[in-house]
Length: 298
DNA sequence: CGGGTTTGACCAGCGC
DNA sequence: GCGCTGGTCAAACCCG
Image (cartoon, rainbow, N blue to C red; front, side):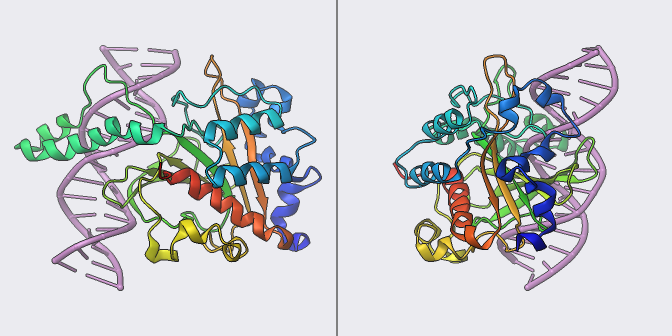
């Protein structure tokens, strides 16, 4: 199958999973210029099976995100600070982010959702358009807090990949240096402030970059695909690839923690190539996506 | 009619 | 201070 897959040759080439990362920096080496070589291409002894077991632990809740990052970092020999700062990192196609913390999601929404509410609430108070606009302004000195974020890339014809949650588009912006617009989505669940951004890589239009921000405080809508939380852990799900359309040929999860100097470090966490023998792992990738964007019950 | 999308305008943050 | 850019809002529009 891989022989018939044009993307396989494009990106998997001779280096297996790790070479898939290459399209991230070839034409824009600015980030990589600052990164030690071994962070560009994760360790050559990279062992997908150990990654899978790590991910499995994470999925089943026995490992938190920091532990996950620690394991992943050590296995790829990347110096990786704890991902608990919620650091503000510029996100571009060359700088994907996962500054996640197992607690941050629930605590951080307040400021963000506050802003949203502020806008809506004060619209009712205001009696003209001007006041509406002004009311949206955030209080000075109130540093905007970032939700934990993570991003992953998929090779897909479809921009907005089905992940089991319901999203409402609230904006679209042209992206500098990219012919493709970036779309902004918000979870339609009332009390959920999770957002996601979807854009195509300007370096490779076949690659969709999806960035999630925040963690869902509710379960995946059961009506869509059944009880996803349970279903995704079932063997039948793992081989059925229900949540993401079949035309996803490649998926790679990325994180970009920052060190003390806010230097972004990119490293591959997980990489999937759609091949028959990897079917179950494809499901596991989806599990991971779902688990990261879904806030676990305490 | 309700919910989702489109799109122009506004605002904040950042770099110069 | 100014300009640029990303993120968000909200009215208008679309669609089932």
